[in-house]
Image 1: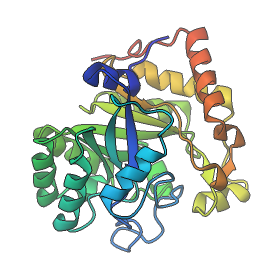
Image 2 (image 1 turned 90 degrees about the vertical axis):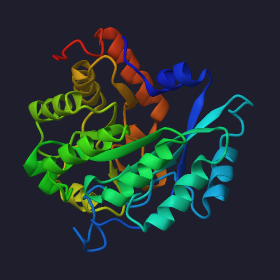
Image 3 (image 1 turned 180 degrees about the vertical axis):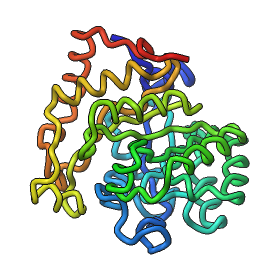
Image 4 (image 1 turned 135 degrees about the horizontal axis):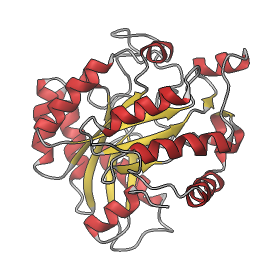
Length: 299
């Protein structure tokens, strides 16, 4: 078993354990306020499940306090703007939030979750400026390359938007991370592996894999209750995830192996709520099946 985990990549870079601190600075999305759509993606609850709120400096302190029993004087952090679309606000708002987040010496990088259609010239200029101070990562929810699935989940932007955003971000030296959801309704293994192949060759530096789970309060929950959504069993997910990992280039940083929403909102699958059990199951499957990142990658 071998894959390039975020934990190990950060430890190599900074020589110590690095934790992500989930923050927020924007309270909406163009897929919710009527600009692109008004209901958001079908699976989305809106706010990041574990993000703090309030002034950024206070968010950082609260987020660190939640890790108090794990940290040491050497611990470092990535400030992670997780909720909604974190480049969808005035430049003044974003500037204050981003620079406040990287101000502490123990924050070594800034990660920003956003959409490819919210990266205009002013935003890119700001990201470039911040990146000169500390490394900036931009995360985007690709989820799938299948156009029919993208319409079903109401992503609200096409694949060409991702191509253009990746090119613009890479031209200013920003690290790019794409998200893929495994188990979207109607997708075959071939669809899932086609998305993985796109990510592998898109010129990005990281990927987050998510199991499709159903959260209360989403339109996907209604689809699930009506019997129109089948959720993967553990071994199915482990197998599909393995196929995706094998397709990634060896140097691609794997930021996440599964999704884990807040247990209070989790409708299905209930097995996904036991994160430790899921991660142990993934690692056992990887070991038993000799999963090596890059073994199916072709440059």
